[in-house]
Length: 250
Figure 1 (cartoon, rainbow, N blue to C red):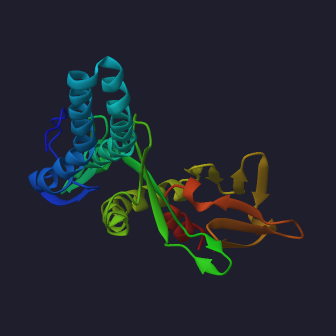
Figure 2: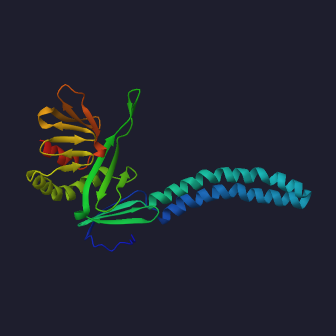
Figure 3: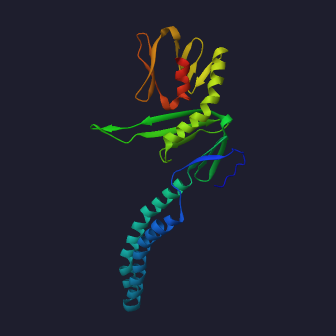
């Protein structure tokens, strides 16, 4: 896998590739689909040629036009499918001993050592309709120093395994830093949520520890329950390192 980055990340552990393109895909998918498009086009050319040579220009235009139209109609969804396959082929994440390498279309490569990962946020959702539950969907956002957040979803295979692998590398490094900062009385930020010696801050709301009954996670949200006040709900996908946050709250 070529990369514009030369940051040494050590031995390759695993690769999560959305959908690699191989030579067999050319033979089993793209060539047959190309024939589906070219068949009516070729027949239309033959019909136009036959009409022109036997009956003139008007016949050539009339006899070939329907087949050209069929070819164009068939080509549009196949073109969209080919573009989708190409985008998925350019999406992969390689996990190394000392960091990760993320490749996203169109050709963007980010090499991130573990020491530059500031946090991870994840979400797990499923929709329901008339009692029917859809397949569970996962998402992952990686926050690294001086880089835009990297958002990944179920287009990557085995995404839950990738999430677990990243947490196993990142959390042991962040955990002692968070505990040390907490003991020193410093404010800690978990995305939009601020933790201090006095309490919790979220947007314009400030809650002191003595006013909080409990903190729970329910239906994809961290719920903070103050005395006699409606619970504050924060989507877990917005919270960085939520497991470390729960450890700190406990």
